[in-house]
Length: 95
View 1 (tube, rainbow, N blue to C red):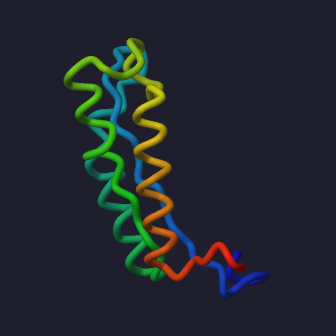
View 2 (tube, rainbow, N blue to C red):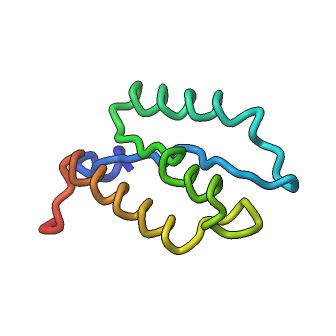
């Protein structure tokens, strides 16, 4: 993106937490989040941390029952967080 459109803001969505036996990625989750944060810092990109957005739905059972896919409310919250991160990075709808 920065090669062809250097003025566009770059925002990274962090790795999503899961609560599904079929997807045993939790042992790798914290290191993956830290690696994503480091990449964002090193490349001066925005970062949307999904843990505080997805985690509550996993804990209270309001998300998708499979523990892997986000529910509609979580999708909407992530969309709002991403929009805010893009605005903070300088995105304008006038572009």
